[in-house]
Length: 309
Ligand SMILES: Cc1cc2nc3c(=O)[nH]c(=O)nc-3n(C[C@H](O)[C@H](O)[C@H](O)COP(=O)(O)OP(=O)(O)OC[C@H]3O[C@@H](n4cnc5c(N)ncnc54)[C@H](O)[C@@H]3O)c2cc1C
Image 1 (tube, helix red, strand yellow):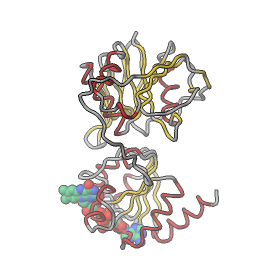
Image 2 (cartoon, rainbow, N blue to C red):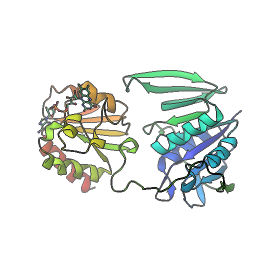
Image 3 (cartoon, rainbow, N blue to C red):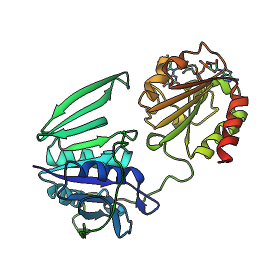
Image 4 (cartoon, rainbow, N blue to C red):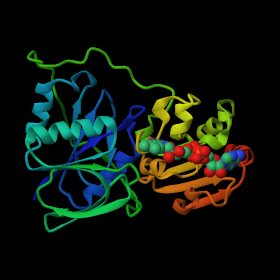
């Protein structure tokens, strides 16, 4: 049987909540030991898992160091490697898959394991359809951010079994000149909650009600294409067929009609809430929850309610 490795995401020097959930989830079918690969310069002494965890670290200045990545890849023979989807994790998973010449599956919505086989469902065609597949050959797995970990009841604290790290070599074929962390806003593809707004906001000056709601929820902000075409919002916020694809746990769409091109970028969201003053707006057909009302009324009320909790 293969062993398991997890590419860990960190947040403020700690394992992210979703990485902790992934460790618990994966340990259900790999009970012997899990190798945790930490990307970045993070220090901590315990991880949450019901199985022994072997820690392995790649410091930030070695992300583009081909020899260091090759060293990691060499240590992953006979491993199944998992990560929660993000730009950084997907880059590393696909690099490792290419070096080891193994298959990678991304966009995973559900995953189970039995008799050395993974059964997987993943979204395809911009989230309009779901593909069911089973594989015993793929070794690299990128799990969607909105993967349902609810079957994990709890996770226990456990001391690390051992710790090692990749040392810098003198034969770098590539090196990182500088790293500029994204500050201020949450990157859209990585956001767990997104508040999106469309032409129904009427004027760029009205965006404070969207930003206030996003702040109260710890969410990223997004917009429809016409809004970025009008320069009301920056282009990197434009979601849809021709923009960013998002897969948050919660997407709140405010004053957006729900055109098919917009839906193509947000279909991967777990829960969709639509706020629109037109009860016939097409978006309501794709919503889990709908509020018929004026954004200028509903958004400040929602924000106030959240702030009072
Ligand atoms: C090739 C192509 C690619 C495209 N790619 C994209 C894409 O990637 N992403 C994208 O978003 N679009 C894309 N579009 C455009 C898309 O077809 C729609 O035109 C666009 O999504 C509509 O944006 P909207 O919903 O913000 O505006 P509108 O269609 O104008 O809708 C505004 C909505 O706001 C509601 N509203 C108005 N006032 C209020 C109020 N006070 N309170 C609450 N609700 C209110 C209205 O009822 C309406 O439903 C593309 C189009 C083409 C042809």
